[in-house]
Image (cartoon, rainbow, N blue to C red; front, side):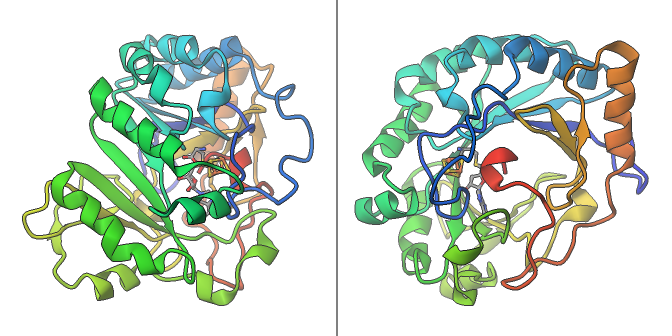
Amino acid sequence: MTDGYGRKIEYLRMSVTDACNLKCIYCMPPDGMKECPCRQAMSADEFVEIARAAASLGMKKLRITGGEPLVRSDIVPLVRRLGEIPGIEDMSLTTNATLLAPIARELFEAGIHRINISLDTLDAGKYEKITRGGRLSDALDGIRAAFEAGMSPVKLNTVLIGGFNDDEIEALAALTLHCPVQLRFIELMPIGDTKGEFSAEAYLPDSTVLDRLPQLEPVPSEKHTVARLYRLPNAKGEIGLISPLSNHFCAECNRLRLTADGCLKPCLHSAEEIPVRGLHGQELNSAILTAVSHKPEKHVELSATERSEAKRSMYRIGG
Ligand code: SAM
Ligand code: SF4
């Protein structure tokens, strides 16, 4: 499928639930989810039907996200079924990893060979604060389990927040020295019901990382990757910079997003949503093609004062 700007759309990000066992300050409002999300999330059969239709139209890559995908009790069989869809060449998972350790091997066997794990700090107290109650040791156990299960690459997503974790840039980057991990600093996005949580100083450009680590050497990036890659001298792993605010990557965008309640989002930061839940056959295919054709050339400018036009908080989109 090609959109109106000549971009090949081959990547579907599926949020399989809005529910989460954490409540990260930048993602979810303090009172958590406003309504019971479990009832609204689609069933495994519904996800598989939509993914099958998307694959028949040319989607090759699937990412499973949430909310926290691992809170779904059927996550392993769901992943297995999605991975068996003809045409899906690549499947990956985004998770906070706090529930990963006991099921990492099962997930690997079901088809999750690549994984992105959120990790914003190496300090247990700060982890508890940013996640509103999470335990750093659970996430670290999950990261270890991902490696032990054979997942590769393991990427760590760190939302860069001025006044919170900018004092840890060096320490987080140092994880890449001895560990073959890709540590990605992501600019904080002004999205959803999180408006009152951050002052303007929290929105740091990712050039902060380059200023703090002048020894970083650029590494060639794969096509369509949203991260610009660097390496510390002699490091086993890499550092990625993802900059939706200071240097958006819309020209390279090859994705659609599917929400847990069955809406396709042509763009992360636009309000437009195309409901596909309950559609079948030709109607479903047409809705997917409409979502592709409605992809805007680029998203609105984002900054401390210019917020995303998305109607949802991040936990209801999937990142
Ligand atoms: N629960 C999983 C996790 O935390 O990895 C998957 C869903 S989470 C919504 C996906 C990604 O979105 C995470 O890496 C998270 O850090 C990122 N994210 C959430 N809100 C964000 C924001 N306001 N700005 C930048 N990244 C954000
Ligand atoms: Fe949950 Fe992930 Fe959002 Fe944190 S970033 S609240 S772990 S969905």
